[in-house]
Image (tube, rainbow over all chains, first blue to last red):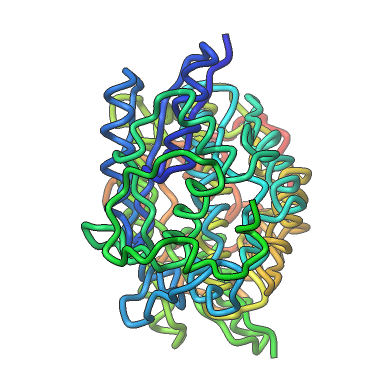
Length: 235
Length: 235
């Protein structure tokens, strides 16, 4: 039986991934890492969903990394969270320095400690070009390091790498994921704003997937209007 | 001018490295990371030496990683710190899961945030085979990832990789490093124990280098007696 640690942020993608990996019958643990993100509210949903699924969950509070990983709207309250579509240049403000290497290195450390074989995270085909640490070549290099960091090699796995976010919503619907118990908004307020990059992406994914979106949004402008003529809304 | 972040633990090697890098005329920052190590006492010396050198120093308290990186004598007080020479198998108890990837990933994050070019750490030629994350191939893979984690590539640099620890002591003596303001003991007590792997290595390095060791050790058995017939003490 495979032994897999899922990096679970409490967002939509990683929550579907957690359900997906549990459904494979693997032995699963989940790990959530507070790296000082403005939207740390998401992490509570990782704990809730793990508990409901009977998965051992570890919360790691590295919130003081906020003082290290500066210059991002997600770690510095003085930098406003941009609104709009992920394809816009303004979204670069949301990039957190070396975020993925840090999160994965901690999860790999947990895998080594527990002699787990894989660390799975919810990268998908729609991950955006503005995020350098979502690049294929970055993950290949880091995975090579993960094979060598211990005598017990750890594989970085991305089960959703060939899925779009809409595909992930469809997979979540199949798995009866409680979408309302996931959180995506970059603004980090109790109710999803509906207009930041990740809210727009979330709404777009439900719209394209044809799955009802149970999320309450502060700005309830129909997603079709927000997307306008964007090619991503053509379906 | 090169812009270099030095990973400074407060131990002998990284303190000499900090002085060495400052002496090159580079712009230097230092970063110390508490990953929950039993010997976190060392970190205070990183702060002291950075301040004396006029280097901006950042302390990052990730001590809760102690609950993630389990199974090591250095993160679990229930596991005794082995005594003896690093070449002994018992020293494997001191390996901390994925330690170097985690430390370097945080330092790389700081480098990206400050647009620094390099992260330097004090790996040396005598780093021990029991530590998988000291292997050359591990560092090559992680360095490849560091080039790709951001649009601003970061180079992992190991200025001492061709030096022995005795060479580092000699370099420190040239640079007038205050060796008494460094801390190496794995047991983490106020006074160096003198008999754990890292104390023995430290004493051996001064002995081989022919440099007076200003360190007070609880066990003051002459290092020659501790080393016995070990080939490393032949000089």
